[in-house]
Image (tube, rainbow, N blue to C red; front, side):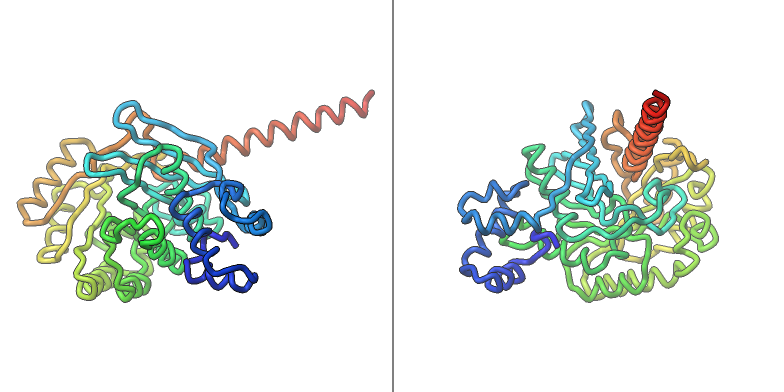
Amino acid sequence: MDIRSLTLSELTEYVLDKGYPKFRAKQIYEWCHVKLVRDVSEMTNLPGKIREELAESFEPSEIVERYESHVDGTNKFVFRLYDGNVIESVFMPYKHGNSVCISSQAGCRMGCRFCASTLLGLSRNLTAAEMLDQIYAITRVTGERVSNVVVMGTGEPLDNYDNLCKFIRMISDKNGLNISQRNITVSSCGLVPEIRRLADEHFSITFALSLHAATDEKRKKLMPIANKYTIAEVLDACRYYFDVTGRRITFEYSLVAGENDTREDAGELIHLLKGFPCHVNLIPVNPIKERQYKRADNNSVLRFKNMLEKGSINVTVRRSMGKDIDAACGQLRKDYISAEADTNQVCKIRKRALNSERADN
């Protein structure tokens, strides 16, 4: 257990169980979630005995790769977790504030065809601490305050439901970074029961549904989850979410050339969302080399956007950040894991050759 996964009340109980004064809990929480320390040795107002004990349950990740855009300041990070699993995050500076897109799982089992995150399958869920730590590490290394959080990196957030909810509560805790829940977006491919559960949490976050097609037939080609839940079922859950929270839904729509970017597709989407309190976020897809899908060209994107606007649908085209360090979601993680595996294989071959040479001598 990472001590940073404990809420202040849980940490207080932990401290009291250990026989330490209650005020130590507030000190530890502040070191972890306000001062964002990376090592217990930095907790200078704690007795050595407490620091030694905390060291056994303090597991910050390690930044193993960092790519910085010279165009717009976007930073992409690859993290190695305590058990060797690898995840990725993105820091995006905007005029209105800095955003960080974080991962919620090491890998993903949803199988969306255009996403690199799912190519290696799911290793495990991330703890609340590991989700928080992405923001904390990026804040430390960039020296910039994060004001907006998007849970849209590697993994399906609602497939890690309990840890996700704990993360939301802790990142918005007034005793921590106190990031407004209105500045938090959670994206899902459409796990219907969990969407309804999330509504009942009464968070003030923005919920974003990865829609990507206006018919079940086309959605099934892009997203295996569509074989379990129909668009009608997903939209019913989204309506429930709006009715309970009063928060407008964002529908993400990745434009794939020749798959879902035609005039007919736009017309079907207008018909599907007519009168729904929502916003459509068009995303020209980033191709991955393991799939044959291609990015919709600019003319197709603009035509699609214009048709939605004429159909009275609120729509924007997602701004492409970090073009000079571009990589599809999950691609950096996959490339790092592949490169590391290749390196390990070379080392094993060299070791076998060396052992064989010694045996011959």
